[in-house]
Image 1 (cartoon, rainbow, N blue to C red):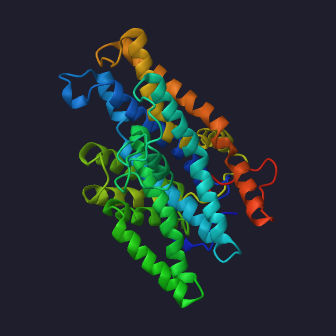
Image 2 (cartoon, rainbow, N blue to C red):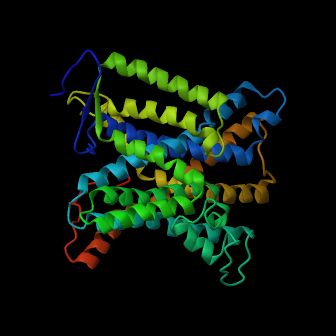
Length: 402
């Protein structure tokens, strides 16, 4: 039974709670799906509609659309803190186990590459089909966004200002450079404190210093945001319903204020403080939900089902939506001469939401073909490399983003 308390209290837990029947896990799944949807909706509006500030006397409907599709920055921030909570928390759960780092590396690579490799292939195919790219043989120039160097570099996090451009002009891939390097930096940080031999701890510390000097400062700076997710996965806040509701209202108010008055483009020192405040407030709320839903709850099952469905293909949606948008824009231009939408035409709103639905459908179909095979591929790799892999039992789903 969960302990009831009038005043909020803080407790440390040795292992993060990754069970799917807890309210915080349900919220994480819902927000992963919602965040990917928000980013796709924001980029579709940016591609198809003019900017709100360029329009004189925009309609109330378009102002509402611009407002609700303007939280892309906050959505990416959610990805960072949730990734820290899930990925970093799961590694800490396994710290000290045999082959923990090796299994972690396989998990991370299979998670990324099972989605990225097919996405890059589809991006190239779409570009060739629209005529935006003409096949001229294999190019290894790092300046060419369709080159083999860009393809390989984006698989290992060298995009986003590190060494190569985002493959195929797929600009949301910048954030995956952050994620990839956080996946590398965190185990080094863990080993720096837990490795038995001094030489190993020293090598990890020097590696972290070298990475901090090599990587763009924005990536290094936002590693602290990612680490907050790890830290809060170890904290459980006991609070009553009223306290959680009050905190949620404050969190929403701060998020809207940040959306309206803050910087919502690139991340960096100019956005760090607003993002730090939003991250801390969100993580406090998330930590207060680490308890199981009551068996008689009417909301647990439907919310868990919706969250699970959309969270499962959120990664594919995030990395594939821009190529899909570009492809649909090309088709609409060729078939109907409609390259951009008018914020004054009601019919164009229907076209926008129709395009958004097609983006979601395309991402889901790609998920079924590729991302849904992640755990099968992961099991196969572990079995082949170690000879004694630990496959998931039939019918079980691994924790999201693990």
